[in-house]
Length: 171
Image 1 (tube, rainbow, N blue to C red):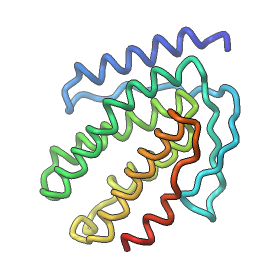
Image 2: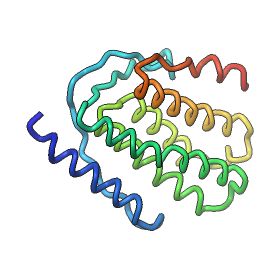
Image 3: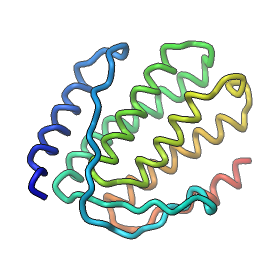
């Protein structure tokens, strides 16, 4: 695509902002990209419309590098929030990290990851009284694991393990 160099620069700028921006600063908006379509169905919800990746080959390596930093931070922050569910600091950081991961994934065309990150972000934002429910935390961990397996699939080209099977074993 003709605008790809601009998108590459925008993704690099977002990555640098993530490294230098304190957690309380607003997250910059990331414009979506619509590149080539790759048909790989999501296994997250059998009744929802299937999301397909539209991988941008120029942005994918940048996204994967950023994801290598983001995903471990999301996992650590999720664990910190679970340990202290009434503490707003890990909750705010988790929301910011998920929002960044969602936008970066969608920019690179990793639509399935963007979709799962969006669903995880929604669950976190609507936690309310669920913060004390073990099943709620299992759902969050399942979504986090699903993002990790989809990232591995993008790296290797091999289909991710079905998160539906592992979720059934945790419940």
